[in-house]
Length: 424
Image 1 (tube, rainbow, N blue to C red):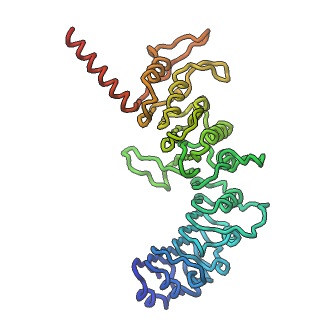
Image 2 (image 1 turned 120 degrees about the vertical axis):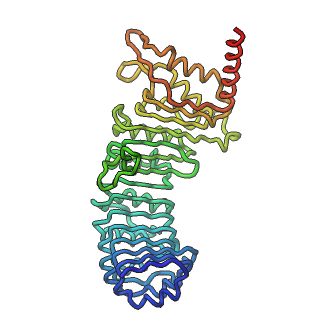
Image 3 (image 1 turned 180 degrees about the vertical axis):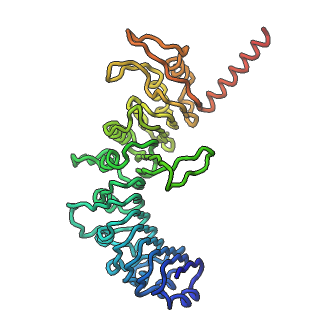
């Protein structure tokens, strides 16, 4: 018996609750949780799928806010939004998917959550968002939890100590989709009081493998790590079936803006050490947000959010965007210079660059910055000798997006050139 309902639910629940022992699937969405709590009780021995969402905030302290379910021997998929269970009493040993969202006072403790995870060896998906897990009394981590079938892991907006504990505890060699939101600085640069590698190092080499696309950015609110499987498009542009398509792997890293210069340096170093930045691997996109909102309060010695020298470690980068004028000028200067690599050869950084977007920068980016970049990087388009080494210039950009004040200057010059040609 399958039950699906969206609405107030009081009368409906009274009618169908007498047959809960025969239910196999539940999809309930209600504006109040009290009717669900009163009617959904006891044993559901045949239930395999449960999806319950309460659209109003009723999650208050007290046992009456918990679903009184104890016997769920066949449950495989559990999705709860703004409603909790009696976590210490329910057994969930056959779970394939556990999704919890917006649970505060009735959230499981870290100990209860770990018990559920350990007792679910076939778990394929674990998603926790805004679940206020408490960690009181949890001993230091000694042995991790190996989930050999876990394919998707999402941890977002939860207490930092709980997020860190779960990141370090869960080992999932088959995972192809990972999303961690709210990552502290230590996830990218490590703890200065601890010599061990930051948790990011754990994920990049062992789980991501060789991503086909990498997106690196800095975010003004929080750090984020996301690794996803992306199905490829068919020849006609339609989605190819997930079951039959070969999938590309995408890696998205958003470091906290506050320390992004140091964080980006550490992230790119780790990626380089893990072999993710080799010339034959994938495509890389770099999106730099900068400190635009705090531009008036920046110190006089401000160096930008990004060290342009790091571009030498990103040979497969195809897209760069920057809104901070300091970052933009540093990137233009670096890309416009022929440099000697660690192997003694000469060339330009980012030889596969297709798009450079500095359109959102201010008037601190000047025309000379653009001219020096284009003449230094592209010149007349012909190879040239640097000493005895023949340097090949990179292909020109597919799209070069300039700030509005420079676009206006170019428009004026084009009009003058047309006027001169007409006079002649």
